[in-house]
Length: 81
Image (tube, rainbow, N blue to C red; front, side, top):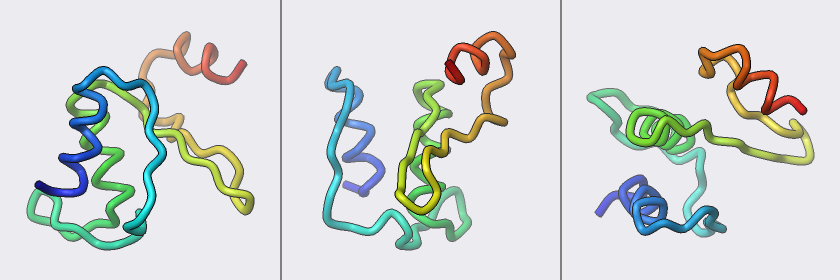
């Protein structure tokens, strides 16, 4: 099973959050015929399958939640609160 498949299975099983360790999210994977960082492939898979937006946090960059992917303005405002 792929790394993305394992993460998607966590959500399919009904768990709301997961602490993921081990493999770097910046490792490259084959995604739809293109080579992308695992983080980008995971972000796309979560959005495509569940309509979820991946939220990341780092001390250097703070919170990143890809606001432009949320089409509904009311949803964007709700998340910014």
